[in-house]
Length: 289
Image 1: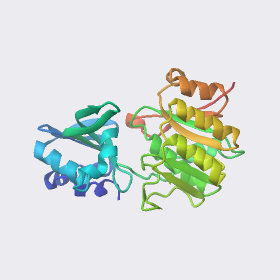
Image 2: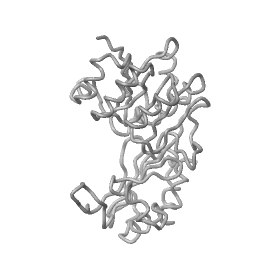
Image 3: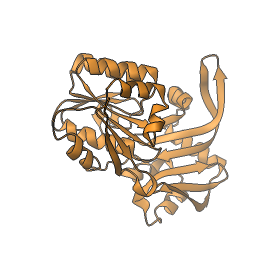
Image 4: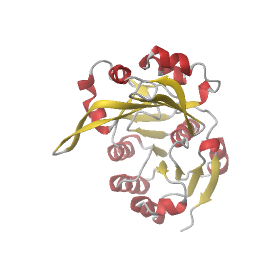
């Protein structure tokens, strides 16, 4: 259903205006900011609509996102986002309440960013044809924000998961969008989903209990991520991962990703385009150590 799954959380006036946009189905973000115009992102470009959002509408939409039970979403709010059924992510902006352990919660919500989760079957076709036609390999998919890394990762999981065992570590629920144990998105018939697991715990558990050919994980970069990936590699699993970076130089400026590359974890690094080239494979670089 895509963007229409977000409609129940939005004021009727905003839904009405969104439905009039010719490229309606290509909207990837909807931003509500208190006392400012609604903004949408299409093809990597943000555009303002004529509709002004009131503070009350932001609060109402926030309560709808939390199903009228804000306290039940305390952990998600402290992390700055809530994932809706269908894998759509809502980023939160407001006033942080700080405790000794960090951000405890966010009050006075002033902005919401609805990121539309879309299945684009076939978006990984080029990668499968050029990289996965032979023996199993590990790959790193890189790109700028809004380059459809998660979308391509999801389709790659689907295609590989229809051939062999894949474990998806879906910490934020954006890849498979599992709801009560059932995936909303197609990630392959031989795929197991570790929903809500922190990346480190998910990867190490998947290796131990499911013996997958591939382990897929989104947005790596921490030391614990690197430790888990190294363990999985030594345990015989292949890794499919994504990371924010527009170039090899940018990847190498991230110490833990540099560590993984230099240790020969990835056979290929795949760069995706953004803006008018969102989700398009711009380069497939073989890693030679």
